[in-house]
Length: 112
Image (cartoon, rainbow, N blue to C red; front, side, top):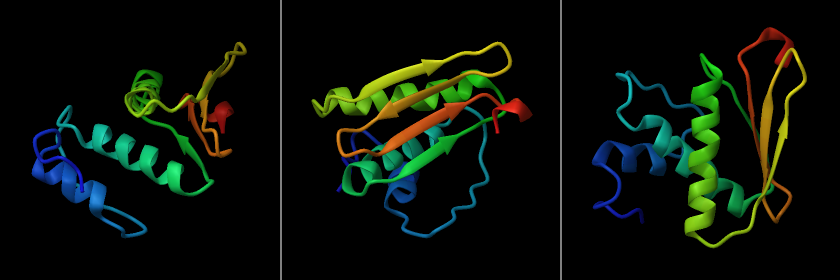
């Protein structure tokens, strides 16, 4: 159970939602990405899986990955971190000890 003094009620709803797809009407900077980062972090601890994160701009994708790294540090989990930055795209990857990874890429079509 997520701590209700750390996450807002709607963040807890997002984290606990087990639907394969979630549709959220939201405003900017209200914590939905933070809750999704925690949900992603937690799910990668349980199962080996890969996730690609891409947003409207590179800064948002990078912030998502940074939140995941903060959760790992808070749980004392050593994750590796890699940055690839050729001239036409940038990506960052967090590798979990179990082989899972989360990749943040720029929104450039070349990145895909």
